[in-house]
Length: 139
Image 1 (cartoon, rainbow, N blue to C red):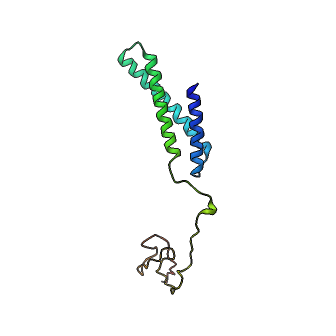
Image 2 (image 1 turned 135 degrees about the vertical axis):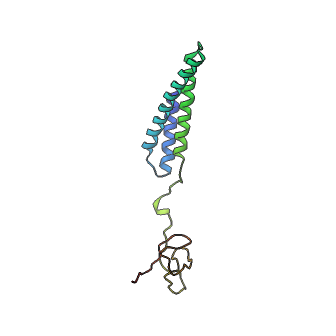
Image 3 (image 1 turned 45 degrees about the horizontal axis):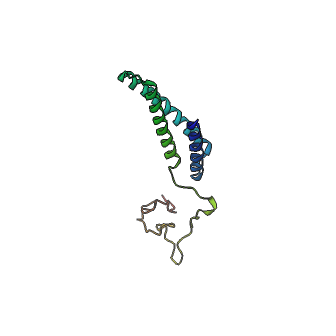
């Protein structure tokens, strides 16, 4: 019962983390459950193997403890995945890029309209920030 409660709250938290980063919360719930159960089964198999090697009488306890430890590891990995990446803000709050030439300067086709870097005459992209330059190719 405690394991189900832990998975529920972990799914809820991972869903919130994923939504804050612009991803679907349902996907976070899916990989949380998959990683938890997958690692739990792996832990049970490892526990069975260890108890077989040790030949101990407490084999069920070893299997159960390793299954829970591996399940917690799967939950930790799921939580790390849900926290990966930057937090995405509302699209309206993202600053827009001004694609006009820099003010109070004559137009230079080799000057980057984003960062202002003056590029060599054979450049198609800004050497500083990678923005495409407005170069008309003549042949």
